[in-house]
Image (cartoon, rainbow, N blue to C red; front, side, top):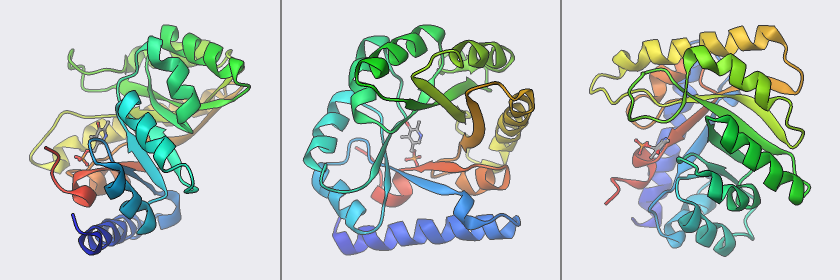
Length: 232
Ligand SMILES: *Cc1c(COP(=O)(O)O)cnc(C)c1O
């Protein structure tokens, strides 16, 4: 995509985020955009950064590593939003400011170990599978609190909130119950005041449903297609 077109699409998405926040009485600054650049070449990602994208979301470690190294001169934040295997934890902690998809003790343990090696406190979100689809990653809602308590004991991890991905619906309103369930779970865990756990972030909402997610409390919306166009 041409840089002018990309710029326009990005500013349009930012406007929609702002409007969605204002329409439900939220401060627009409490909603941050993660521009999902998976599969996009580094030159396109560079254009997006120049146009004002300051958090980039990537799904694949190797692909992300190449882009992050090539674009290391830009002061942007990189978030990992894909499925993470424990054997890639080492690379994930080196590359990413935030990992949205922690859903098991095994993975958390490995991330903690690798973060410790490089003397880093790794920010993470816990991915929750609200939809109960067996094909989706994420800890089940009823197991989330226990997992968070266990992970909170890892000194090199810092839990910042929750992430979810509802099933795809043509009508975004249908995703609403999934988002509100995640928010309620976040509030419940926050009330527990678990040491070393900050429950401010809700990573939810994509191109098709981010306005609904904002209404339900999203603080990080992960948007790819609306910014970069359809992926091949
Ligand atoms: C690809 C992806 C997105 C972005 O999806 P769009 O529909 O293109 O906005 C968001 N979150 C996750 C976890 C993804 O894998």
